[in-house]
Image (cartoon, rainbow, N blue to C red):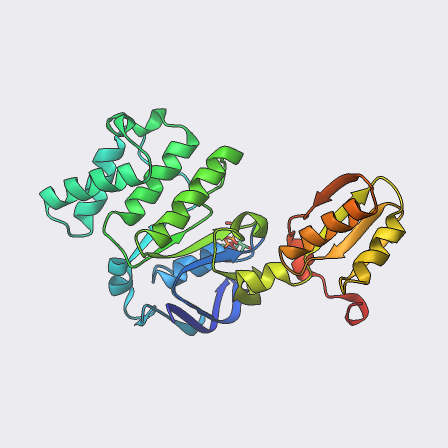
Length: 303
Ligand SMILES: Nc1ncnc2c1ncn2[C@@H]1O[C@H](COP(=O)(O)OP(=O)(O)OP(=O)(O)O)[C@@H](O)[C@H]1O
């Protein structure tokens, strides 16, 4: 396991328990850490870096104890903090070279790694300009670059899509995917949206109020309970009946149907039925997961 926590707990004062009795195993690969604001994501990440001591419990990152081996962990782990923390007067190149030197790289190697890393995150000529003039997307890329420059085995990315527009978000998610696949660096990336991470991550850990809600592969979390919403021009009940006769779960409310998504073939089955009944398809969509769905317990144990 890349990260293992055992009853990990962090309290602030007497009233706030930011992380509560958290026991979870995180495998190598890309893992999403999902939770609403205040769920305890940043506190967990800071503890895993050995920057914030736990109130109780233990954890190991890449086999190193967070209580006693913080330095060893930070040598091997990159960290992209949540908040804007970049000096506006420095250029991306100056900052990232500085961070590379701080982590022990000699000057020439630091310059070389900086140029490579900034290119990988998609900063080119702009890298010589002061960061103060950068867009949010460019600043996020600089933060990502400084986390990667010392060639870590693992990076913690705290809400890297914060403040980005949809295009910037997709680009950042694409970059994160490449960090994992092309460079073989494991990633723990936090977000308050499961929907945005489900295509990027192999594994998902969901926390709420500092407690573990679930930890599972992304395939498992998205397949379970996924529903297609289908709207046809007429005869909704008939369409639902035809789908049920093929072994699918389908209910109709007028001409709007809910169809249990088994796999990609479910889409084909819907299209085939609609075509064979000579009907029109008004909509066929897969609503994104929302946090509320994860927290909901199926009433009466499901259908
Ligand atoms: N230094 C601190 N002192 C007191 N309370 C804190 C401190 N840091 C965090 N907390 C509290 O701990 C809880 C968890 O905060 P944390 O920042 O870990 O959540 P988060 O999931 O990262 O949320 P966000 O996305 O808003 O940063 C919150 O209730 C927060 O107010």
